Image (cartoon, rainbow, N blue to C red; front, side):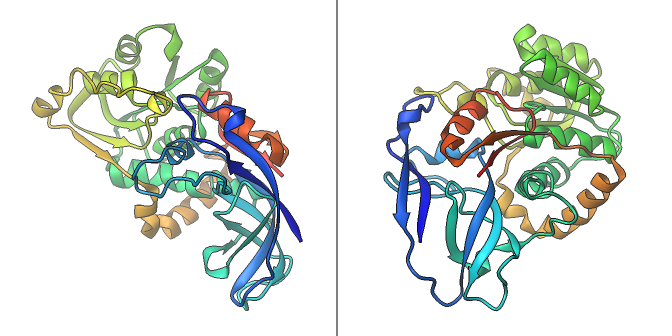
Amino acid sequence: MKATEIHLASRPTGEPVSDNFRTVVTELPPLEDGQILVRNTVMSVDPYMRGRMNDVKSYVPPFAIDAPLDGGAVGEVVESRSDAFAVGDAVSHGKGWRDLAILPAKSARKVDLSKAKASAYLGALGMTGLTAYAGLTSVAQFKEGDTVFVSGAAGAVGSLVGQIAKALGASRVIGSAGSPAKVKRLLELGFDAAFDYHDGPVRKQLAEAAPDGIDVYFDNVGGEHLEAAIGSANKYARFALCGAISQYNATEPTPGPRNLALAIGRELTLKGFIVGSYNHLAAEFDEKMAQWLADGVVEWDETVVDGLENAPKAFIGLLRGENTGKMIVSI
């Protein structure tokens, strides 16, 4: 049986281009005991993947040249040599960027497509949702009544952070985004204020949106946004540092916030985090998010690109901010 895979052809310098990727058809080996064969139906592209394209030591190994990329995917089991899965089961797993995937049964998780469509398990009910929940509640130690600022707020994680904060009793939630349409969508999702960071200095726009300061900052962007958040931070404010998409394509070291000294007198907490360190919250998150979705308290957006061959285009578009909500590739 043959599989179509997207390989990393070369390491990007700055912004990735289509030539950094290659579509390859490979012959799959027979299944071994304990393995399953999955036909993927949807896959995720995520900002963290840009870092894995660099040959640098990080919390996860870099992608290898001339080898398939990987990432979140949902599909149907078409062959099984494991008692844990039967043919026809829907599963989520980490071998995206291909139409057929062989993987150990222990690395797959059954999902219920009668409760939500497949892509939900890559977004609101998947790693994206857990990232938002864990970052807000555990890393940033959110408390009822907090004023929360979210950068990249129209993205997959950011849009959920804002809605979860409102569901948990935030007094005010502010989001930044990259277009008037995205700002409008944030207000529809229940954000109390939102602004387009292209419209002027983030520092000034945030100060106007949060005249009494902020207690929590959920950072997806870094750079100017992080500096602005420090400037608007109240005493004992807590920052969850999830991403820095403004810097992922940088070819030179980027400067840190120029006002970091304010963190001393204001006794700020700035904590970076990786969602894999918070899997102990998964069951709690699953229960709460399922209820929020059922009650209509939380909505989730997605931008869908059709065709595995267009996965590189979707990824490049993601880094350019061409998505609202989760960027999904339908295979």
